[in-house]
Structure formats: structure tokens, C-alpha cells
Image (cartoon, rainbow, N blue to C red; front, side):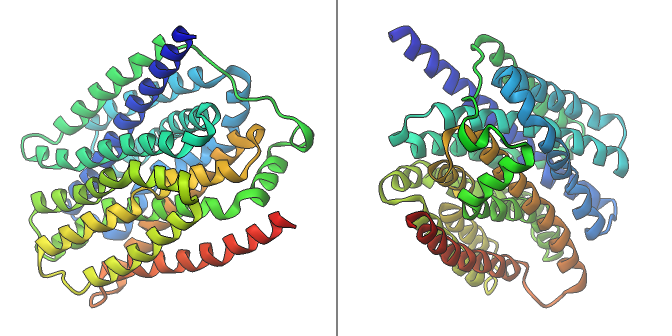
Length: 393
């Protein structure tokens, strides 16, 4: 019994380490490449579109990953994903070309999705019911810590453009090696209505149970890519210092780190729906207020810090909300849909945000973020009420 508990703890913390390094590489890559492209005179639309490679990769692999996971288990998927990410990061310095870097970002998207899909599903399937929010908040916290540290690597380009890529690839290799020391497991077998359906049928069934839970990961994807890939461009046009931009971006992640576990525990106690709605509402208000104080880098940084406290848990809260609403044998499918919606948000963010920056001059980028958050708040508020009514019936 003690040995089994020790194995579970080792597995849990190994998965947490892997996710934190994945967050680090993503947090570094988005602003780093944006700054490099901006300094090379690449247009904001093309800059934003290039950032979508990561999330196109996620969408490309999504239809093909659930069956291998059910057949081979979690560990082989994590090993393959980690290897793809590590090798792709090593290749970045070889050739600074927009199309080549787009392909590498696409490959990192595939590898990262293998990592996240396997770790998320493993954690949601094995976490004790009463501690699901706490377990997933630690997962979100680890990703947030990595993502907060990532942008701080951007100033290293003043030493060498190669250095951030080398640091990130070494850390990925170290984290990846820990996977070989944990035992493999497989998801719960399909049963009932789920057993007789194909992948599309399972997507449809999971969507019916928990569609409203996929919106927080969607809006978090919009936030992550819009802020990290395009805010640096907007800030540099406002004459912000490059090192200050890195600190402002890190502030959002630091805010998420501060409240990640408390919000996860709060979700266990009062319900995920309430916590998600509060986060979306106050996040919209904060970014709306921040749009009026863009002349001060300190105030913008403060807005990012406080809004991170409310919004930084949206992804992990969305996953746990989905796990609350979805039968256990459909958790791999539900996690897959969370990832797909996150990727759709991540694709939408850079494209719409880049277009917004190109065609508008007098409207604040932070106001653009506030409007998106408020729209999703309204949809979640109305949709979750209807879903509750349907489930009662």
C-alpha cells in the first residue's frame, strides 16, 4: 500500500515537471520569435499567422491520438511527444526562415499536444474525486511557472539569438528523461453508449455532456497567444522597453501562480461554474480599465498581474469542469476536446489580434481582449444554466 502510494506520488510529480518545462518552452517561444520577426520588419499579420503553427500542429494530431493512447497507454505518448519537442527546439538556430520556423512550430505543437493530452488524461483519470481541482490546479500552476519564466529568456537574444533555444532544449531533455522511471497505465475501457460509437460519435457525446466546459480553455488559448505573441509588438510600438515587456508578460503568469491552487480548491468546494464566471467577469473589467492607462508601464504591469489572478486558472478549471460533467470512460475524449478548443482559441487569437493591430491605430489592444472576455462570460453564464436544466431533466 505504501509502495503503491509512493509510485503514485512519483508519477504525479514527474508529470508536473514535464508540464512545467513544456510551459517554459512555449512561454519563451511566442514572444521570442515575435520580437525577432518584428526587428526583421515582418508584418504583424504574418507574425501572428506564424505563431499559429503551434496550434495547427495540435489540431492536426488531435484526430489520431486518442486511439494510440487507449491502445498503448500514457507513457509511450509522453515519450514520443517529448522527443519531438526536444529535437524541434534544437533545429531552430540552424536556419532563420519564416517557413522553416513555421514547420518547427507545427512539430512542437504536435509534440506538446502528445505531452499535454496524455498528462491531463492521466491526472483527471487517477485523481481522487474530492481533490480533482487541487490536483489539476497544481498541474496548471506548474505550467504557469514555466510560462512565467519563459518570457524572461527573451533578453538573452542580446547575447545570442541561439542561446534561448539551447537553454530550452536542454531543460526539455532533462524533464523528458524522468518519464522512463515511471510505470505505464491505460485509460478506463469504453462502456455503454460510448463503446458502440466511433471517434466522431464520442466527440458528439462528450460535447453534449460538457460543451460549456470547453469555452474556458478556448478563451485561455486566445489570451495566451494574443498576449504573448502580439502584445510585445503592440508594446514596442508604444515605445515600451523590451525588458519591461518581458516583465509585464511574466506578471500575468505570476498572478496565475499566486491563485492557481486556491482557485482549484475553491472550485472543489463551491463549484467550478461560479469560479469560472467570476474570473471571466473581473478579467474583462480589468483589461477594460487597463486600456485607459497604457501610458504607464507600471500600471499595465499591475493590470496584467491582477488579471492573471482571475484568468490564469481558466484552462485547469475548464478541464476539471469537464471532468465533473463527463462519464469517466469518456475522459480521454473530453480532454481531447478541451485541447482542440484551446487550439482553436490559440489560432483565433494571433490571427484576429494581428489583423486588429494592422487595421486599427486608436483602439487599445487591451480593450480588444476585454471585449472577447465579456462575450465568453455571457455565453458561459447562459449556456451553463441551460446545461444544468437539461441535466436535471
